[in-house]
Structure formats: C-alpha cells, structure tokens
Image (cartoon, rainbow, N blue to C red):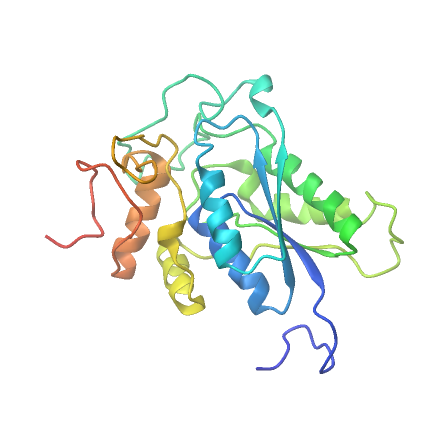
Length: 253
C-alpha cells in the first residue's frame, strides 16, 4: 500500500495526537490515524463527566488500537456548569431521530472541543507532531456547534499562530476523517479497519448492574439512539453491553 502522505520508503512514521474519548467514533479515528501512517498518541480527558467510565473504554481501545502512548489529562469543566453531562441534571432520553439535532441539547459541554484540541495542540508541540485527529461528526451530530466544519477550519487557522513553532514551517492539520460520515458508514468503516466497537462506550447515562463486568448502556439517550441506529442501518449487531430492556433496533425480531 502506498504511503498516503507521500513519504519516501523507509522514512520514519510521524507522530500524531488523537483525541480518544472511548466512544465508537474516536476508536475508528485512532485506527484511521494508524492507517494513514502516523504513530498515534492517544489523549483522553477526565473533565467531570458523569459517564467517566468512558475512560476505561479509552484505555482498552488505546491498547487494542496500538497507540504509542495514552495520556489522561484532568480538567474540571463541570465547574463552569451548563451541561447535563457534568451536573446532576436529567440526560435527554427517548427522543426521536427527528428531535435529535434540532437544537443544542443539554448534553453539550461548553467549549469542550476547543479546550480538548488546545491541549492536544500543546502535546503535539512537545512531541514535534503537526497532526491532530478528532472524531467530530457533522452528519449524525447531536446538535453540537463544535462538531461543524467551520469550527475545525477556525481552530486549524488558530493553530498556525498559537505555538512556538515557526509559522512558515509545516502547518498544523486537524484531521476529522469521520466528519461527513453517518453512523452506519462509521460502523462499516470500523469493520474495514478491524476495530472492535464492543470495546467502546457511548452511553451518557450508564447503569452499574450487579454482576456486570462493566457499566451497561441505557439504550435510550441520544448517544445510544444514534449508535444503535447506525448498527441497524449497517446490518450489524452492537456487541457492547446494554440494559435488558434497552430498545435494540440492531437486533432483528
């Protein structure tokens, strides 16, 4: 397979920083970075999220996906308020596909991707990397403003003047390989890349059940709804654990 970055044979693989939440999208993005010939350095955040169990998934995925390193940075975005993911507020559930994406939901964490990419940029500067990868998606989005192409383009422009690196040198690039893919296409891409999505965690309101080896997905929050719909449309069954009464459109009657 030819090097997609046109590096000469035998040239060292460059490092890249990959935002790894522990969800299905970031798991696929880690594999995409490797497929493109980068040495991925995975970056996760403990930011006060109520579904912090996603960090266990991130650790599993980092190992399975061949990350050269996995760094978990602690932040306290919950101190800002404004999100049901960082506060004791109800997580939206049982919303129809038409309702999801109509407006910014309560699960939006203010400036989260801006903060995450800024930290990723700092680590990239330390590593000598010029490439950042993130799993934002503008098709099956939950209405998050920081998942739009305009946001990525603006951050990439900022990156060129935000570090001590010579701005005349190789520019920083923000890669979002899933940006224009719907969830079904992402599930299919995971299969092509050999990514085990059962290792990932997506649910915003997981359930800790007696005897379960890991928290169970509720199957009813927006994140679960989009994930399960993606598996169903791809004609595959999600191997991640769900509560017994979760709606399962991915399973044929």
